[in-house]
Length: 271
Image 1 (tube, rainbow, N blue to C red):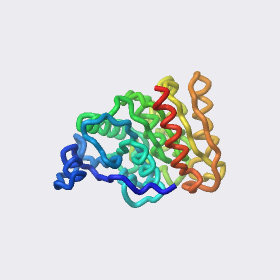
Image 2 (image 1 turned 180 degrees about the vertical axis):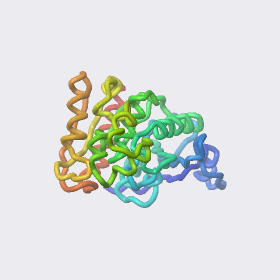
Image 3 (image 1 turned 120 degrees about the vertical axis):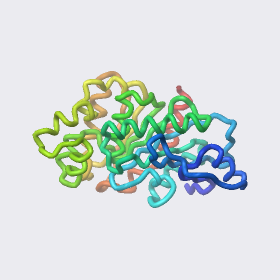
Image 4 (image 1 turned 180 degrees about the horizontal axis):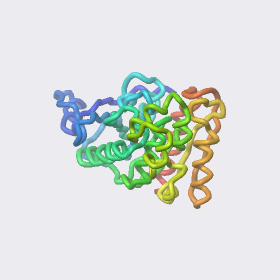
């Protein structure tokens, strides 16, 4: 299915969004309280007086939050499907692009939540999508109390910080983000920020979780990440499911916009 009727805005205030939609002009870029760029995709015929369901998109390593609007056709396809279904989609570029869910990134997500709920009429509980590194960003934001979502989707989501640190492609960024240089300091420096190792997974039992992940994924291993998190959440009485996809990291089989919209719609109607 092709989704073409949408309004895409990269960081506009509510006033700017209204002006752009009505053809009246434009305004300054929207940033959070720390100057981090925020991104926005609006449904067609957006009405500023209405209250909308909304989705926080948390990007993967090497991406920016602006991927919901430009640069990545798979991510754009998800945002387009959601906006066509009546959802507002938002994202942050984060203070550090590859933040791996550290304290600053948790604060970035809270700042995003505050900025958009103050500027737009949005439901109190957002939906969340986390892709790759954005999985850890999402889980940590929720565990650390940024908000309670209606539902969360993980797309090949990282859930296991030690496992990701063992991947040489990510180790240097993780050390930088958590402020340590010696592997022996990993556990102390990252304490409280490993989702699958968290002593407080109870917040993840309050909403349905659906994840797409492949056994062929060499970057974010399914058994150590999506499968492990799902088993821990379900053991606590939560509802987490994993759909097995194909191919390596980023394979298109992980991007299923119709199924994603249906999952969010079901959670929205049930809430």
